[in-house]
Structures are given as C-alpha cells and as structure tokens.
Length: 133
Image (tube, rainbow, N blue to C red; front, side):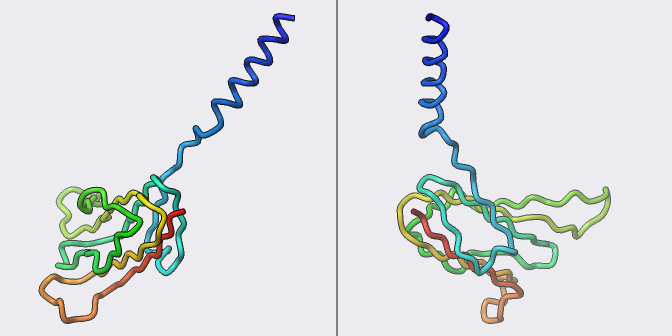
C-alpha cells in the first residue's frame, strides 16, 4: 500500500513539475530568415546574428525599429571569426539580443553600409517582422 502511495506521489510530482516549467528557448535568426514572419512568446529572447567584415568599412545598423513588442538588450556585439595568426581583414558576426516584452508586432530592418555613405543604397538589407503573442 505504501509503495502504491509513493508511486502516486511521484507521478503527481512529475506532472506538477512539468506544468509551466518549460524553458522558452531563444530564437536565433540569420540573414536566411530575412522577410519571414517570426512569432515569439512574451519574455522570449530573440537573437539576430549577421555576418560582417568591419575591415571593409561596412557595418550593420538598425535602420528601422518599431519598439512596440521588443526591448533591445544592450548594444550589438562583434565576434571575430577565428583566423590564422597574422592574417588581417577577417570577418565575424554581429549579434543583437532582444526580449519580447508585450503582445504586439515589430519590424526590424538592418542595413549594411559605410557610415559616410548615408545617401547610398546599403550593400545589404535584412527585414524581420516579429509578432509577440
């Protein structure tokens, strides 16, 4: 009888621990996701990772952001690619992090350009539409 009671308590504990305890993993987007509609849950993290090569003078900037649903978590971070010692001009990745803070939709537009060429067309443009539910 005690063994059956212990099994029932164990099953109940497993059910209770699984309800509402699912970690919401971050969603990571790259250039391949440009133009897609992406859905997030509130409090979920969004990570944008774009290839870059700052030695060319180009850099990524957020050209459009409608901050209704997302909060940017700090500045974008550059991560250099691993290159052989002594080699210069290697590229890397720019990474931005956002948190879904309210139910709404946002558009993020990233442009790749040289800062002194503001009137020229960007070399690349990536647009992400985010819906937070």
